[in-house]
Image (cartoon, rainbow, N blue to C red; front, top):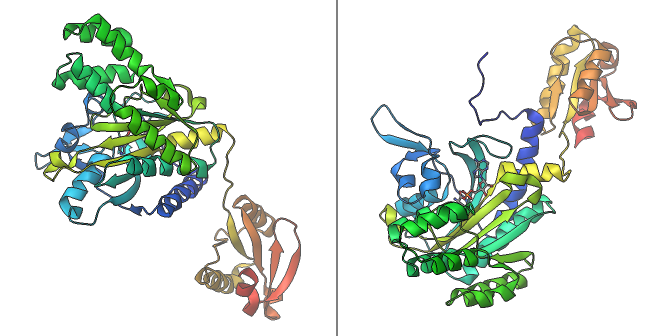
Length: 414
Ligand code: HAM
């Protein structure tokens, strides 16, 4: 038997209905914030990701040479593709450009619960502006999406990668090796970060100071410990969020992010119930467009790990029942099948979700199947009733039956 590739999943109908339902909630929340949907290809030239995604994403890149000898990669994320799309076709549009996207991404990771090789992101980008108002808009949307899905136990942590980058530069970390250090700090691998920085000639006091900076966590008051103007910036951002009703945020200068393109504010949301793979959302401000041949524009965005947030919701018992169908048409005998098919067709044409017995099952078995399919009403088409121009409607939850003229069947459903 052929198995699906490691780290991928199939979604059966119940799961798919649940996913579509919650995806719909995310879409409509994004629209209430004035974002519009876009889509980009699932594969791109590898270079798009090689340029700036950083060592974490690169070692996980699913790439290959195609038949035309092009170096191609399945997208590991969608920010770089969206910025490429902006440079290719939207750079003259009025700013800011507010777009959202939903789709699968691919990373060659070691699969485990909440970590897949094919996973789905729901993300949003605001391209063409920098500032606290832009960052607040992105974080407020992320927070509203998480709330709209009904998740209760989560934390949003806001940091500033610019502060850390500056501190590393002041400590003597060469610019082209900052990503290596950030990668260790992102994973809180201090034991590995220390010798790495020592090897770059960074003094112990500076290393200790960098580590202390990444441990700056708490409410707005900890911003007093943040050097430069970044403290004021984050204070302004947090007070804007407060006015927007987003109050459940913490300051955490240890938010480093696994991707390399962030320049200023960075944020993450986590659902503690998920354990190791608890990060359900990540984002921040960045510039990428100049790398892809466009002018330099500032942007802010984020992506929600759709699979992970669904896992967190499941743990909180946020379910979604089978949608079922409105009608299940049962021809009692084979000779009335044409009439039954006609009734099913007119129900479908009126937008009533309708299935029909095509197995020639006996009544009891057909009713059992209808109930399993979540049908709310059975339309029983029998020769005796047809002679009177009628069919029988059976309420599947109460078992109550009533005769209805064929001409009234559709109106009985709408
Ligand atoms: P990211 O943090 O790499 O950011 O990914 C966003 C989210 O995708 C993560 O928080 C996580 O929930 C989910 N995720 C990542 N890898 C996996 C995986 N292997 N399996 C399941 N879920 C996963 C980005 O990708 C940025 N493009 C976000 C962004 C948008 N920044 C600015 N704009």
